[in-house]
Image (cartoon, rainbow, N blue to C red):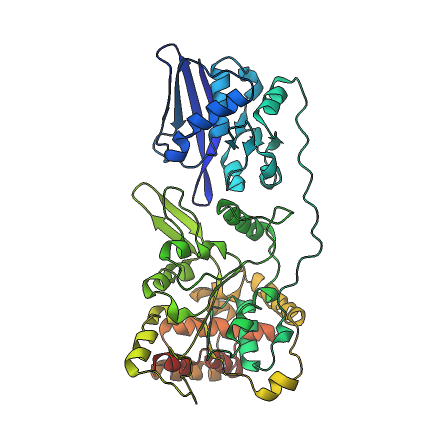
Length: 504
């Protein structure tokens, strides 16, 4: 007998449909899985056998061949366990074929007959073309986010078989998790005393999606500023929320009780992170990295100068294109990676360099430290701000700064102006769009011409300055050509003095 059961496997953050074909015939008893299974797939034999025995069913003493089609696709993970088990029972005439017609199965089976969740259910369900899909109970809410299938679940193999046979109704879906109450509010910008220029840079970064580099000595407030940036971003809605949820699901991260990620994520990897952990890849599972997990949110690289240079340079393509392309011998995967990059670093190894600093480092040490960050990567930061230690009076008795909610309201208005131009934020405007939406007034054009002729600005930097100036104008509610005030402020936010502080 032959049975074909639809299922799916995860490759990167996308699901790939797989047909599990099970053939049961007379001959020397054995169980063989073909179709490029990895070790975790081949181990399904032992898990399925124990699950059947624990559920009161017999293991067939026949020759069983399982083909995972298409054979050219590498299969990894335990998500095909349930489809293999059902296919084995259908091919062995234990379960009628009509009861699983147009039904897909996704899940891992335990030795005790339980049905367990697997990572990436959103992508797996989305890849399956079936009317009904059976998933583990813990994944039912996640599977319903796709909205195209009749989602069913059962906690054990025995209950699943009774439901398929019609002997019992389908088990009720698990109750929604207990509401943990209102979410913990993100850190508020009002806690930051002083730093008016850095606060402006933070607001511009949030409003326009501009990458931000903060350079300053230890204790100046760089990390405090950076961690308050996600609280200025608008909540995720629609396609952006579903994309971020897909990525977090594929990585096996815990999802919120609603199942949908609506808060812009903040990812802050340690400076010892490897290239694979930052951009993704690895083994046959091709797991998304921190750059993808920060999609539609913030990737914060603290102590930028302590990261390995080759690791940092892996971010140059994602910063330009919004995706990470990982190619391996047996697969090529594209991960979404459209994030807002915020980095913080000291001006030198001792941290006391820069203007008015008392650096104790040798020239060689400073040069080696500055060489950790390549020029092309530095050029991709639209905003470069020198953060000095705050004034003692501001720290002890200064008034609180403007709250995150007030700044977020202005950010939302600026982003709505950008949406009217057909982009999410002004950082996505290309050259043609800049000519339409960010024309230059004569005085502003002269400022930029001087910056270009003096060598302080590259052609790529010119476009970035125009985007930042467009964001500044949007925050001020100004329409029409960009004036010299907005362009001058944009040039100030991209201060070459910061680069000198790093490279000095």
